[in-house]
Image 1 (cartoon, rainbow, N blue to C red):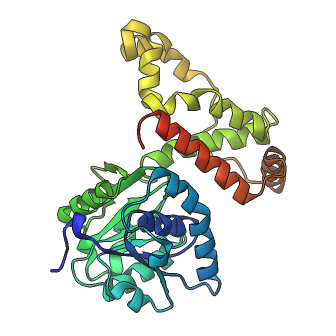
Image 2: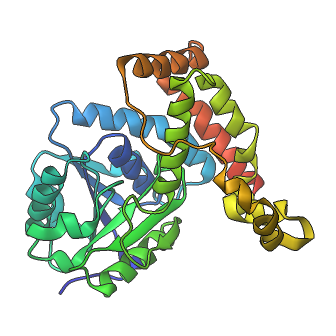
Image 3: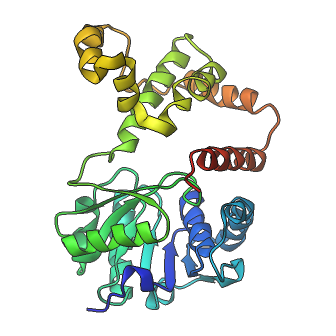
Length: 313
C-alpha cells in the first residue's frame, strides 16, 4: 500500500470544481501544493479559474505558503489522468447519492492504492457512499464549510468499511494544512455543524413564511447579536456564562422549564413559491445592488478580520 505521510503530500487532486470544490482548489494552491482538478462541465475550467482569482486576495492576506502559485493548477479532462498521481483526493461533486457512489468507485479505481479519498459531502454518510469502492477502507468524509479556503472547520469521519488508519491520516493531513479538525467518533446524519445550522435555517424560513421577520431582520439578529459571541465560546459555553457564577448548572436549573415554551417550529416549512420568492427578494433587497463577487469580497474581509482579532491567523 502506497500512502505518503500527511506532511509529505505534494499533489492534491480535487474532483468537482463548483463553489466547494473550487474553494478547496484555491486553498490547496495557497498552501503550496500542485493541484489537479477535474469537473465534467464544459465551462468548468474558466469558472474554476475565476473562483481561484476571486479567493486569491483573501488567501494572500492570510499568508501564502512558500511556492504557492495559481500556476500550479492543472485542469484535467480525464478522470483517470486527474487521479493517477494524487497523494490525496478531495471529492466535491453535487449531493446526489447515486452520483456519489458511482464517482467514488471510479475515483477509487483510478487512484494509486492506499491514497486517502475524502468527500466534501454535507449530508450523506460515507457508509452510504462507499458501497461500490473496492478500496472502501481508504474513503473518508472531510466535510468543509463554505468557503473552504477561508473557514477553518473540517469534520472528518469514516464509514463502516473505512479503516481507522485512514481517518487518522485524513485528520492529520487536514491539521497539517491549517484546518481546525473535528474527528467524529461515529457517523451522525448531517454531521455536527450542519445539524445546528439546519435548526437555525428552519426557524428563519418559518418566520419569513409567517410574516414574523424579514430576511434583513433575521440576518441582523445573528450578526449583531449571538453571532458576535459564537466565534469566541460557541453556543453552549455562551449559555454557561448566562448562568452567572453558577454556570450551566444554574442556567439549566432556572431556565430549563423555558425549553417547553412553544417558540420553535423545527419541522421543515413547506417551500411554497411565495416563501421562495420572499426569501429570494429579501436577499436581493439586503444585498442592495452588491453583486455576488462584491459580497464574496466583503465576507472574506470580515472573516479575516474576525480570525485576526481572535489570534487565529
